[in-house]
Image 1 (tube, rainbow, N blue to C red):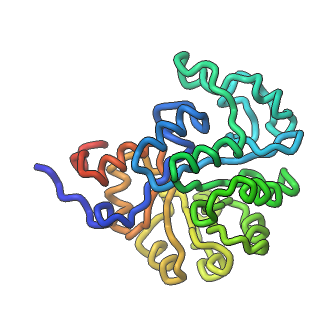
Image 2 (tube, rainbow, N blue to C red):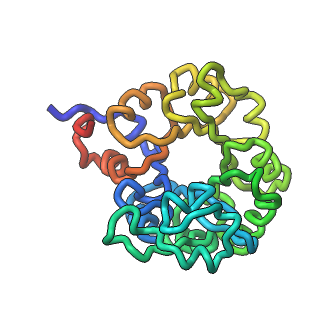
Length: 263
């Protein structure tokens, strides 16, 4: 019997965020993964930024290139051209060989083309002095509407710097299980500079979400890839989710997935 889908998913307010593109099926943070995600009815594309040796913003999750390329070493020790010389697809499968690293500038053009919102995570900002200023410069140059950008980080001080610039971007704080397993975040304090509080999905409870909503914080947990986890989380009244498999959840929004069938 087809199970009735929760109202939260069907009322149009629930947000689906494509984590590093359609990264369950394609090499993360590459053009092929982004275009596959942008072709879906997602609400946000999500990506991560690091800064190169020559002061360029590139989209890659790790601080090193080891896991997702055929190179080794830290991103900050490479120039942009040196990063371009590496292959970012083959680790996911031979059919993806030759995928290049992308600059943030390219991703901004892409979301403009598809008229989508972009969720940007600043990775390890403590390693990259001035990364916030450089990000804001590139956003201004891109002419992407401020309402289409959310900037987030685990580093609250970095987000506070962007808040201080007061340029109209929505801001978010990521909440790790390691740091908050035994205590709740200070929702009241976070609400003074952020609009989103995006926790590891294992931290999410009705109490967590209720306290966040009390301070007008939007809750989109990471990284939710299956309907079993979603079924539990939706009962807590989350506002959306960050997922490697956005096709699963955009299909659910359209009603073309039998709810509860994917385990």
